[in-house]
Every structure is written in C-alpha cells, then in structure tokens.
Length: 334
Ligand SMILES: Nc1ncnc2c1ncn2[C@@H]1O[C@H](COP(=O)(O)OP(=O)(O)O)[C@@H](O)[C@H]1O
Ligand SMILES: [Mg+2]
Image 1 (tube, rainbow, N blue to C red):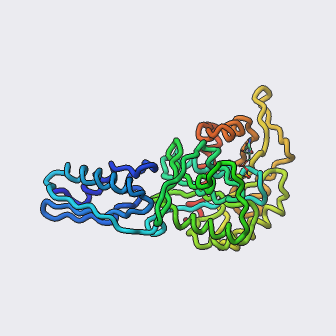
Image 2 (cartoon, rainbow, N blue to C red; image 1 turned 30 degrees about the horizontal axis):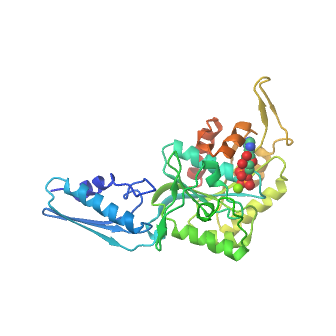
Image 3 (cartoon, rainbow, N blue to C red; image 1 turned 120 degrees about the vertical axis):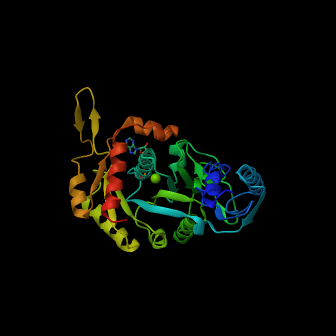
C-alpha cells in the first residue's frame, strides 16, 4: 500500500495549468489520507478555472491509480484563500527615492540572480504607477484565476510574475490611481495571488514614499528593504527616504544598490563615472547597510529591457547581486 509520502511525491508530477509548477509546489494539496487500498486527496481550488479543476482532478486520479496497491481513489476540492496557502520564506521590497533610477531593473535582476541559484522566486510588480516588469520579461499572457485567487504568469526561466499590467485590457493603458486605491490594490495583490511555496518574493514598490502603499506593506511579512539609487541622487535624500520607509514599514534596510554607477569602455579597459563620482560606499555607510552592488550603464541591459529579454542578460554583476542579497538576509537573521 502506498504511504502518504509516496502519494505526495506522485502528485508532484501534476502541473497547475498555466503556471506549470506542480500542485504540490503551489500548495494546492490540502490533505492526503490512505487506508488499506484507498487514497483520498483534498485539493484547494484556489485560482483554478472550472476547466482546470476538471483537468487537475482527472490527472490526479490517474496518477493515484498507478500507485502500487491502490484501487480506490477520491479527489475532492475545498475552497481556500490564496493568502492562507502561500508560504514565502523571504519577501524583499525594492524602493527608490524617485522614478527612473532602475528600480524595476534591479528588482528583475535580483529575481533572476536568485532563480539562477536554484531558488523558487516570484516578482510582485507593485509599482502600479508604472508597471514595467512584464515588459522586461516579455510577458503578456493574462493571469487566470477565480474568486479565491489569481495565478501568476511564469517567465521563460521559471519566475512567477504578477503585475497590474497583466490584468489591464491593453498593455499601454495608463494607470491613474489615487493613493487609497493604490494601497488597496497592493493589499489585494498581496492577498489574492497564489504564489505557493516560494523561497523569495521580490516586490517592486512604487517610487518614493507615498503613505498608502507603505502602511499596507506592513501587513506583508517583509524580510527587509533594498534601496536603489544613482550617482545623481543626493545621499541625504536617499538616506532620509530609506530611513523613513524602513521606519514606516517597521523593517530594516538589507542593502543598497547603485545603478548607472559607471560606463565601462572595453577598448580602454576603463570605467568612466558619467553621472558624477560614485556614491555607493558613502551611501551604504550612512544608511548603515551593505552595498549589494554597483551596476554599470550597459547598452545591452537597455536593449534587453526593451526587447523583453532581460533573462538573457549574463553580466557577472547578476551573480554577485544574488550572493550579496542572500548574505545580507542571512546577516539580518531573516
Ligand atoms: N544600468 C543600466 N544600463 C542601461 N540602461 C538602464 C540601466 N538602468 C536602467 N536602464 C534603462 O532605464 C529604463 C528604466 O529603468 P527602470 O528599472 O524601469 O526604472 P524605475 O523602475 O526606477 O522607474 C530601463 O528600461 C532601461 O532601459
Ligand atoms: Mg519601474
């Protein structure tokens, strides 16, 4: 007779339609009982359309019937809320003092770096004032879902992505929200998306320190904040905003990332600090958090962002960003 562990293992072969991760990884398996030659499995229907429910149920029965000594199976659905099914080890919020400094790019690269280290990763594009994550990853599939949850879209390399942009009728539709609405939308996103079991969720926050999203982010179990800035930003401004943000969210700053730090000219093997002297070390010292990385101005990065191919970027900075973030989280005891 199959054991409960064997049953659970066999269910790992069943993907959630559209997300492609298994029903086990998405935490849809709520209960497994075995007795004599009978197996009962209870699944959450969270985020599954009616067609998907029928398909998953049929696949589950098929898989169970192939187990040794099993000749009677039942598969039932129960309702469950996405937020009760999610199990995310680390939530990292990425902030900037203002727009256009590369916050979304850094959010994407952090997610890509962790994914390349073999971690299960998701990105919540919570910058609903300028949602750009799907474009960088070349995604336009509409997320599917039902009343109890929304399913993220999977990127080419296997990162779960959710963005307001994927839910809008047209990719270029402007999003004009007022503060409270932004707050509510972010909260709803946080609660309604079924991420399943993730090692890391990267949250691309709206720029600046608007109150509504911040207050609501307090209800997310955040590990900490990563601050993105450029050499053009004033150190005092970044520090003030970062400290302000950390205080409001009651979280610590895990690290800082300087973007557009320099331009590298291979022919001369030279770094040119186009936007002025790098402020990386200084900012890190004043914020009191490690400098996780300094990104060059790289035309290849800009091109890949525009083409939706950011996952193809292979600069070595990606690896070091990922390692620095993991180290910072470990050091923070998160
Ligand atoms: N280090 C960089 N090298 C080249 N282009 C960059 C770099 N950082 C940002 N960009 C360009 O700037 C655009 C805006 O960056 P983005 O991450 O969307 O900014 P933010 O989210 O802070 O508004 C990107 O799509 C990319 O084209
Ligand atoms: Mg952005």
